[in-house]
Length: 118
Length: 114
Image 1 (cartoon, helix red, strand yellow):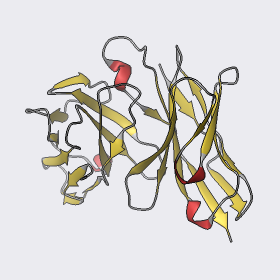
Image 2 (image 1 turned 180 degrees about the vertical axis):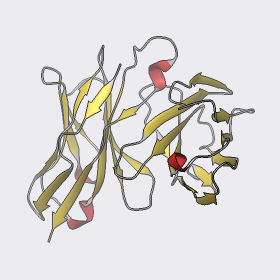
Image 3 (image 1 turned 90 degrees about the horizontal axis):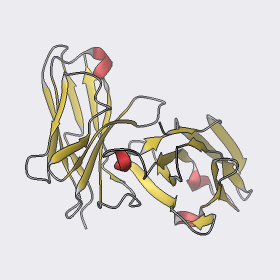
């Protein structure tokens, strides 16, 4: 079974400082990994994904994430945080080699609330 | 272009009643997903369709929950004999068929069972 853990319920950073939101995963094979952001009373918005290739992937709004296979991690990063980055962030994993027709299922973590202080 | 549309945005119903939640996916997306999100939690998988058929319904909590997608586009999530524990935000998402495609989410339907 596939699973995702986001060990921090909340992350607080000052504007202009770098930010990291942590994510670890568990799948039987090579994972497809995704980050989503959710603003209040809105649906989830796709930020970036890792499928294969370069371990460092870049996405929307200046975010990037680094895939580390040995640590089974996919941490979200941004070099300089903005107050407008404050939101709820979700990491998600898909096992494309899952048996039967389950390859499309995307499993989400519990989410991390990011607060960027002015 | 238009994104994923969910109606209604809010639904209040009494315990024991039947409800239907509708999802209009992005045109051309063959995969459609339903998730449920409770306050302070991540989205919980319910079911997903490839075309008209349910490819994986392992997340449906019990037989009171049912979903259809008769023409491979619009989908309806149906909940019978609603219970207070069903109160949550129900999210719909669609994507292209490829497993490396991201999901595109609607804004959700907030269901409150009183």
